[in-house]
Image (tube, rainbow, N blue to C red; front, side):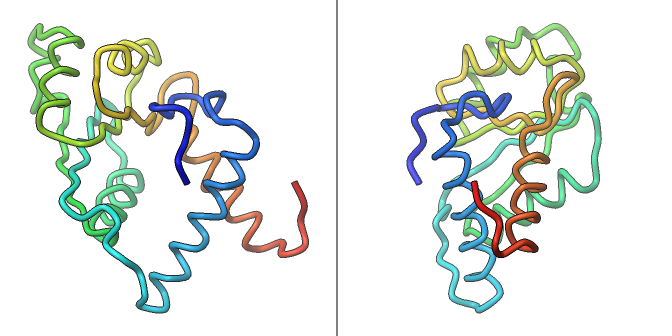
Length: 153
């Protein structure tokens, strides 16, 4: 599914049709993976993961998801980045945009994500901020749709 939005920061960027489409496409990809018929749709793509707030589930789900879809993930903690030593968010966004295809960030302040998205030339995904957790909401709705086959809307 092609989205109109470039970034996924809050879910408000998605139309209702895009929201449902993302869930349906995710369920389809999951079924294909279980059947062994999945395609490497992210071949030669790299996701940079920024973790101000560490998380086992977020890291593992994004990293393994990238691997299963043919891509690669790079994990960066606050200690691995110059952000903690005075580099601007703008410089970080520009640098990461040169080397990777997408950024997922799990941060304390949502404003950092907004600033990252403002200066990045690649998509930015909110892995968790103090205001929003869109990937968790998508995962929860995916589970609901999988478990309740007859649900609508």
